[in-house]
Image 1 (cartoon, helix red, strand yellow):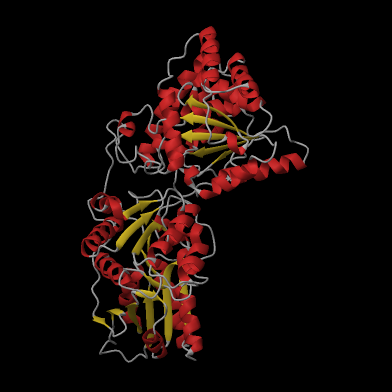
Image 2: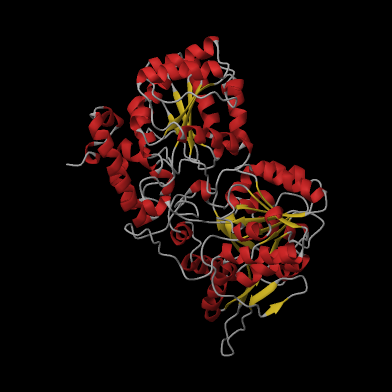
Length: 640
């Protein structure tokens, strides 16, 4: 019987003999490779936190002592240790196990947003609540990566945590990376500490440690209470190094580390000390992303941060041979950089995922990775624009949510020419609620003067991106979905305002039936669905003209004119119905006193659960069959 099969709760883990814990770590690593290679998911980050997660659950009493995972893509081991190992066959699938912590799954999951840099603020609030409830002795543990610590929200939280005496244990999971290698001054300090750990891997005997510690501390000017604290930690059997650092003590925070992140004994001793410590404390744990699985550890791109289905023996992933949206954009921004030396690129720790790496390699002096700091990215872009540069800020759609105020007030108010390229817009599928990009249209469309493009295919992406960077009167947005880009859909006509007519039907010559004319306004990749719907309804006397506005916001007067000449207008988008393109068109029709009925197909105001994109679209009525039936019902109702 395997050790892993015995673990159903953290209590089972606590009861294991220490000899079995080492075996458990090996079994968990093998389990992760086997299961995640079959479903896809975040492999490298979870391989790196196996021992750390085991040690946390051995020492702390989850869920009474909450363990908050920042971002939580690295919480697979936590899920295994809290009784969910048997659900990994349906990881990131419809009605299956979420790829992030999920409150509906377990009492051990306290949060579920997968946006970075929030864990410390959660922990601060929970510790305050425990204090108010007379449970001040309880610990709250926040696990935060070195990448997330590049986000300003972490430092806002640290500023508050440090002022109290509440028991917040901050575990810094330092692997030197987020998606990309961690950057910035803070990262440079951590790198220095990691280097010191590398020189101290082989621990001397206890007496030698004490003597060496006294001499070292004296030579560094440590006296009084600081010396006592450090030696006391050693005396208590904590066999990690306590290195002097100015990063956290100046905030009033106790710091211990760096700890070898794959040494179970060192981790257990460190967390045992942290559990008993009275007040806020930082435990700096150095881990290796992809640890224990050579294909991940040796992956120079991102150490298998996230993978698709792959061969677990070789680590070779099954990849599509078709071009994807990101690669199309990647080529276009490099071409733009070659033509214009005022074009620069900015991202927030996402150079690879958003396609900026080729630009960074070709134009290193014009590329800025600001870390996980979307707010700073946007206002820094505003500063560049103020000085005559045209910045392209490339982010996942969902992460622009974090910088909306900066877009509204620092860019929009100043009418600055900044282009935002939003990858993974609309429904993304298995990543779940936090990573879907269904909010961008509703949010950014309220910025006065902004222009938003939603390309339907690769040619239009290139075309609209190049149009965007020519705009000098205000911000522009180009949004596109995740995955492969399909074949081009050529227009039958381009109207004066830039609207593309994609399908224009004619009534059947032998038909005596009255016809009903419908204008179908398709946003982005829904153009194909709209064309198929139009073709299928033609023989029923429902004549559907399909148009792609290309620039979906603001609404052009020509689109209003087209709407005035038909019996029904239908809009379709994979952003929220509330505040989306359909809503904007309805406002424009009302303002122009156009009475044509308008119906909207879009995403409801819900948080999408993990599933494939087609499954999510079918669930909310945006699949081909549902759309055709809905337009048919609307048209038949009007024809009565």
